Length: 431
Ligand code: ASP
Ligand code: MG
Image (cartoon, rainbow, N blue to C red):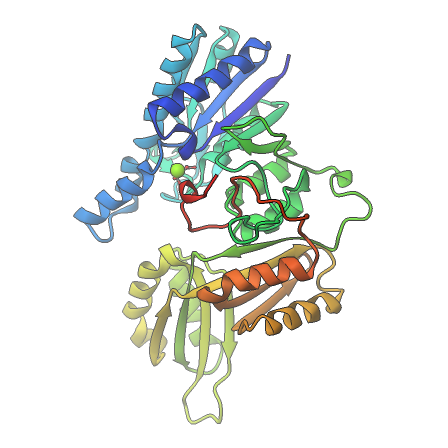
């Protein structure tokens, strides 16, 4: 008998029909004799709809109130799933994040889990119940305020519970049947990766593969939680993410996959006065507005003349309005000349190992993109990743050409329903 944590994403619980299907899988797992803890996301696009409502009443709603609103989504799917499980004859109990013992810091909208005290979960399991936990939410120990963990946070809830309960595995059920070498909607012969190391998955998630929330992978790695990602609609083996070096084998290909991200925006701050103080002012302003930066490139001003330099920053598009508002308010203090903003920017990343030490990989990457007519706006390299910024319209051909050039595909036969990119509703994927 094992202890299994299962997590079902929004599309897996988007309707009462789907919830009943999920309940069947949960009850089947229970019937095999396992203890089952289930984390659910809000139904379908509930979180987006709630954000839309907030936007209608206030363009920049207080983050605390946003959390009060957004934490209303997950308990609905939790309670409905508990009822559906009960209707199938199994004991069940749904809990809010707070009741489940998910303790966070006080950062509304992006709280970090500090501790999990799963006493109530254990009690319910001891009674023989299946426990349903509302994902994406917790409670701040100091203030008693309800918090959310950031978009996609239910993955983190599931992995944190698996760690705290010392579960045998954390099964992530989603609308894709695993992690692929590239988004199969762009690359039809993309391959499902049967196993991946935490490191590789972390890079994939950071580079835009939306199968797992980035933070959840860090958590899994830190606590050694074995994660399996598979489809809630099928029975395939999915992708197992673990520390095992054998996961990738001795002859791991240097390049594991190509990820892309269309969710970023480019912010250009021009005429930043020379010296580190003004630049520090820009970064301090953005930090105080709690804007996450993905990339920052500085071009020194040419020929002096008090023109200063330009800063090109890439940040999540969702942080754009807050970043612009904060920088406009500090314009006088920082002394920059102008702001530019554009969302037509995409990032394509090659994930693998030994990237920095094999400059041939970088050369081949650039040659491939050049042959495909992709204009590289910026390039950055790290040990396990090469990322290229380009116009969003050129992302598909960049992904395809790199996937091809590095021989990542399998013989073409049409891929299943799967995805490795942010920003496009997975529901639109042709099955
Ligand atoms: N419902 C939240 C979101 O859409 C959390 C999650 O689904 O993981 O971001
Ligand atoms: Mg969701």
